[in-house]
Image (cartoon, rainbow, N blue to C red; front, side):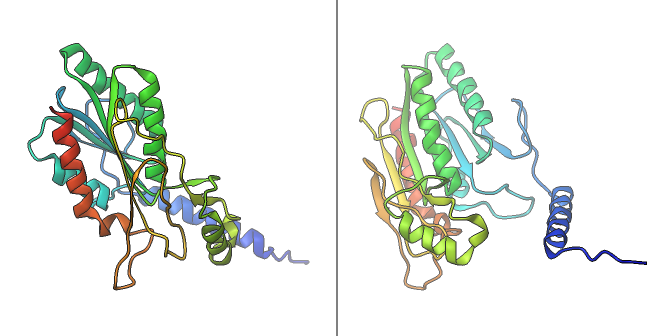
Amino acid sequence: MKRTVPSIAALLCAALLAGLLAGGCGKEIDVFPEPGNATELADVYRLDNRGCVIVSYASYPLRKNSPPDGVRAAITRAMGNAPCSAASFYWTERIMAERWIREQLAARRNAGWPQRVILAGHGLGAAEAAETVKTVLASDPMTEVVLLLTVDAVKPGRISSTAGVTGAAIATRMPVLKVNLFAYDQAPVPDGRRFWAHVNYYQNKSEYYHGTSMPGAENHLIGDWSGLLNHANSDDFVVSLLTSDLRVALQRGTL
């Protein structure tokens, strides 16, 4: 009897599929609380029809008993007792996040409070935060973006001034990606009126992904003496700075 030997490609595909199925069944994600229609990839921290609407986009889901990333931690520290509505969404959930933002802004409009938004994110989440600025500003002429806070923003297919360095690193380390992730530099430029400010932190030493300066932003190139800084932990390195930026924005947004 002739035996058929599976190809290496077939074995790899089978292993990948098994891994995905196992990972999908074993996820432990905190459920998004009421109110609002959402998936398990989001967390609401506070609901109030006064003050700013704060949304952060995370690069990965927050699993049970795991510490929050730097951006999430900064938001929870910065809120204090300030009136606001705050939530964190996984970076793939921008449509859901924008719907939630519209609901919160409508509550402020109905109550006669200013319609103000703060957006933050790291990595792919930072790119989604920047895209949300465009949507929010276009949706209602009375809405203002108090702050866009980005850390090491990257986005599929976006080429920037640092793409040569980033692309070479990805091609060397992760050829299967075919160099499809580059530093993101297309955030809207603040005008000081409806879009108040953009603070951007980025590093350019990571052998994998890294960010870049952005036009019109308050840009900060971050580094460390230990050599431990990389794209994955860049928002943890600047969490105290992120917290300070958010506190200032919250104070300004409630005036």
